[in-house]
Image (cartoon, rainbow, N blue to C red):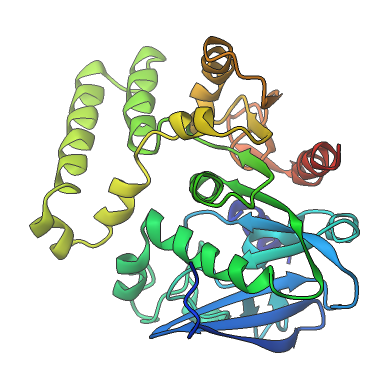
Length: 341
């Protein structure tokens, strides 16, 4: 069971005809809601189950994998993953906020464990564990996530148990990019949290990693040069319609690789940026205070976690994450405390 808990951490104008429905309690821990808009279904959950207390919303945007919000396991029984939020101190967070997590597109809310691969990604064909569904790949692009979140918020803000005067949006890894665009397009957002973010998008980190590996002697400069060129070529394909039609996974590479620091600079709401110093994805977060100083902006709070990696685990002497030494609860609690100030 401990190995499964580790995986949880790693995963870490709505139209009038769109219908929203309260589907009731999910596995005794969360409230399940479902929206229908034309042919698209959007599932989302709220930790905990009560609808009697009016509170603001804390929307958490999960990472990049098609991981279901809940799993049916023959060995462990049904349990909730919730985009990795089960690793936080939910009891404390829900004292202040309605915690909302939206399902990944074209991914079942509750999936049978046999349809999950080693990374807990949903796969429709159990004989092809590394082949994600074509429907998910076609829906896995930045603008789509933002639109889905917009629909969820327009439903939530009408509910009597929601205090719509405050909306906290946070995301981890790819979710930080989704959270950024939600904040950019939705004036209801009052606080933005970014965890393990890459200010320059996505593909740049692969180029930077190849260079660093060559500098550290982990690979030859010739191999690094070839790897960087391969990344350029793959990124070029993402801008070729024929290539995208043949490989819809390029949609995510294209849309999630745009720079995001310029969006942060355009926001005037409080922004919280947290990352580990051992996280290659977030290396360039060190530069962000410089950009804000140059722009004479004072709305960025930057929290650097020393010797922690992308998912806020400590790093062992062998350079690998030590899964017995995770820090997500305290990382998220620091953000919640900041948002309450």
